[in-house]
Length: 505
Image (cartoon, rainbow, N blue to C red; front, top):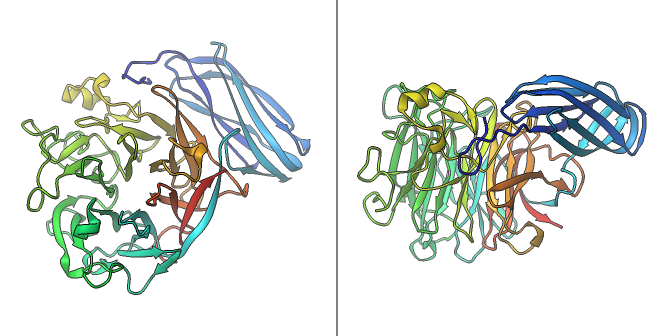
């Protein structure tokens, strides 16, 4: 089943070439996105350009492809040299058709894909800073200095000023307050940083980090705390100024969320994961659908109106069953979200479970489906019946993609800068890596080609080489230019973190 813009069912059969991959030969994944069986799907993989001695054109048939299923088609051996274009076409007997083209370099029997969809925008990445352990995010203070602030997962915030990282002393060191993270791999750590909209006059900033547990039966606490900048040095926060405004018990080490961002309304928004483990197996109904817990939610707080905070008067659960802090619910792991500087829309990337990644435009009171649905696809339909929830009332993502394409979606920003006019109004985002064992992050953008219809494109890269990085986040400077946060290795053993600026020709 798929749902349209208003949650209606889409019955038209839809065959899609999801992705093309290289290596020894070429593989493409073909998916039935419709709701009926597709039969007699003919396919062709053809190479154009370069010197192709073997495997120039291969054809075949998929006799049956059921709804929601995907099947691999392959050219097991290609022999050739030089740059080529790989085009995969599929035709189903039900009159559906799709075609996808990727560029590649042939090196005898090895096929190396060149990043980017056909006719996609070309991105240039310029290294801004390196020698950081495991940066999770980048933001600005909004004070006119255009300094960049980087949160490093082990618990340190660095200032980048005019391309130089201030390592010692750092802006803020939280390592003594945090859990000791596993340097090989961990989802805990320093995950969020946001500066108050009036930082230039009040010096207030907010952090999201993984603190030691104070209760039994949990793994750690997610702590949202306020700090103030030092009165003596604008590049150092006062470490003694901590004011903890919220503690959230986390039953597992993963799915922490971590995003902090002030909305155009001046309120602080907080992304919180479902509590971890797999499948949101917390209690009878999980945390995503349970409005009596803060887990699996996006929260909205007024940090100016009370001690330690007040509830915005129009939060959706005031006077209703559910915690007043909740702004929207039904999330698995909303690790990164952002507000469009022009429209004010809240774009959230929710990391999926086993099969689907999604992007949502988040509205007050919206239920985004987890764990009933993963993206638009059934995950636990019995839970919907148990809670008496109609599927049509769940908010559909504006875009989703399967784990044939990526593994963990990393939310970015709608571009509103001036250096790359062709990128204006497009949503830039990425995927952490297609593999866990080696860095293979991908860079994408999303465009609304007609009202309610969104199209994903993979950026071409100016150097025509794979990124070969894990993508952990994105950031904006004061002018709305976009930055990319990456590491060359998983974990925080090595100082492999890097910050890049992204421009488009």
